[in-house]
Every structure is written in structure tokens, then in C-alpha cells.
Image (cartoon, rainbow, N blue to C red):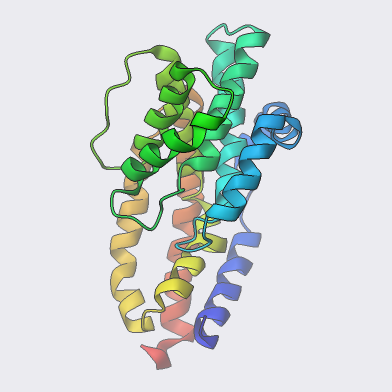
Length: 252
């Protein structure tokens, strides 16, 4: 990353540090804590995390750190939504394992065009050696296929399969809030290294895409809390845009 972008990233992170933490983490702390504990202790998840850590390249801002955040929050969403759907403890544990596997693998082919489609195909091969039923593997792969915004999705004809996909999608889109301006955007900048003038030319379109995410959340919990993630991100983005034009005008 160039020195200019390093400076802008630091200023962006200062802005992020002043922003409120999204209510999701406070209101659903037990679900987040349980998902985190499951992630750290379940033998299947631990095995898959080790595999993903060796395979997932940390570029485009979608490396292992991103995958882990999505995985834990997808698990928290499953905990919340699964209980609301009446899942008993045994079923909920199985669904938690399924959605966390989907979270770990969802960006496994991030470099490819149509990465969600290619990721689903690759995940199917990977999961052949894991202790999942054919139906569970199908749920994981369909969730990965359907995790992108503004694209055509395949039909998921079971409610439990659709819930896996919806939890994965919402957890992935939570990252479009503060995380985008603290981490993801700068990892992408480091990978592409565009001139600052080009970065600023594309900035308004990026903010427009961010705003459009607000109406796409799928679970009841995502619909309640997701827009706040995006609004916080938009506020950060608007302040950062003004800051760059003011403090870094010599480079534009």
C-alpha cells in the first residue's frame, strides 16, 4: 500500500473508532458468544478452518479474517432464527455447524469471476471428506451460491436450507458497514493500487451500491439490524470522502 493510502486508511479508522457499535452485538450478545464458542470448539469446524487458512488468499479484502467474522455472525443469526423457528437443541446444533461451514467456505474462489458459483462447486468437492449428509452439503453449497448481492439466485426448496443461505447472506452483508472502511476497502486498494484520482471517481458509485444493500437483508434479524450496519458505514464513507477532498486535495 502506498504511503498516501496508508494515511487515508488511518484517518478512516479514526472515524470508525468514533462510531457506535451496531446494536446487533449488544442485543444478541449471547447468540454471538455461543456461536464464537462453537466455532472454537467444534471438531468439524476446527478441521475446516485449518483447511481454509491454507487455501484462502487474503486479497480483495476477503481473506481468513473476513471469513471468520462472517462464520461467527452467520452462526449467531442461525441461533436466533433457528430458535424462533422452533428448532430443538439437537437440530440447532447441526444447523449451526452447517451454516458455519458455509461461512468458512463462502469466498474460497473469490478471485474467480462468478466466484459464488465456483465456490459452491469447489465446496462440494471439499466436503466429500467431511461428516455431512448429502442434504447438508446441498444446503451449504446452495448458500454459498446465493451469497452475492444483486445477482440471480438458485431456488432453495426447503425452509431449513433457505435459512442457511439467508443467515450467510446477512452476515456477509454486515461487513458492508464499519468493517468496510476499517479493513475491506483498504485490502482491496492494496491489491489493485489505483491512483487516488481513480479511487475518488469511483467513490460515489461505491457509496450508491452500499446504500442499495439496505433493502436486501433476508432474515428477520438481518432486516432489523442490517440497515443500521449500512447507515453507520454510509456515515463513515461520507465523512471520509469530505476528508480526502479537503486534506488530500494536492493528490487529486
